[in-house]
Amino acid sequence: MIKVGLIGCGFMGAMHANCYKNIDGVEVVAYSDVRREKAEELANGGNAKIYGDGKDLIEHADVDIIDICLPTFLHAEYALLAMDKVKYLFVEKPVALTNEEAEKMLEKAEKTGSNVQVGQVIRFWDEYVELKKIVESGVYGKVINANFRRLSPRPAWGWKDWLLDDKLSGGAAQDLHVHDADYVLSLFGTPEKIYSVKNLSGEKNSYINTLMIYKDFVVTTEGTWDLPSMRPFEASFRVVFEKATVENAGGKFSLYTNDKAEEIKIEKRRLSGGVEGGNISDLGGYYNELVYFTNKAKAKEKVEKATLKEAANSLKFVLGEINFNA
Picture 1 (cartoon, rainbow, N blue to C red):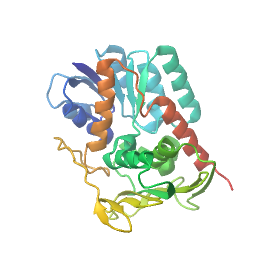
Picture 2: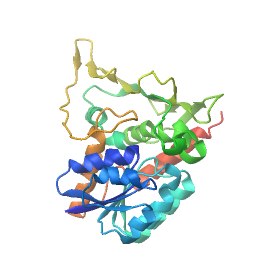
Picture 3: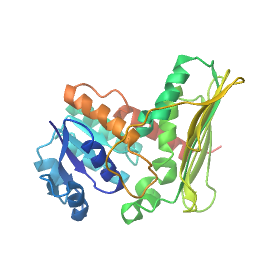
């Protein structure tokens, strides 16, 4: 049995807790949150130990894995302590608030031999996994252009509205847009040039639109959480190939050629447990990433997907977008 210590029992912590309940051979045996009632709620009257401070969990809990679902500005502080405790650490995205923090985490991981996976969940989301297979197969020829969008109403589920303070979260450009930036980098590598535009008024870093220029194609990425509350969340993409277009939009994952238009079928898992609030419709990608992570821990193997190094590189790229000046 792999024993998990979960630090941070808010929206994302609850998401992770429900995923772990669906993974055989894994159990959350310790929960921590400054709002003790949140930890007790996730423990649901079981035998898990409750800690009011994540540092107490790190010091005293008998665990194999630590999972950090705290606000971004706390990631580095707790991750550095956790790497002295366990060999397998999961940290939610974005990996840290600053490049300096990410560098300290990389140095600590190297020193301790810790395997750290970061919650760049899009790499594990079924449609994005399938798109990667299509791109790498070359079945429809070269990529001509691509577009990735992540558009959201203002996030009202964060503890004390920490998400809306760019000094704590980095704003939508860092917290939300990092998903698409990380995925594009994992799919196509680093672009030769970028041109990035941010919101020119209103809340800092609440909107970003970046043109990523590669040798023979371009990718555009757009992210915001400055939309009205009644506007549905959207995570979509369109990739134009020489011989086809693949699109994920409006709840449909589709393939278009000159001869046909068809839906790309993906079998979805049925998982128990739900989480209210946020913009998540199912546990799918989160389940997939935690299955991968816990399987690595069970086998005592090296984490090779959504690694700390990759997440640090994605953070550096996004901060470069935020600070871009034409």
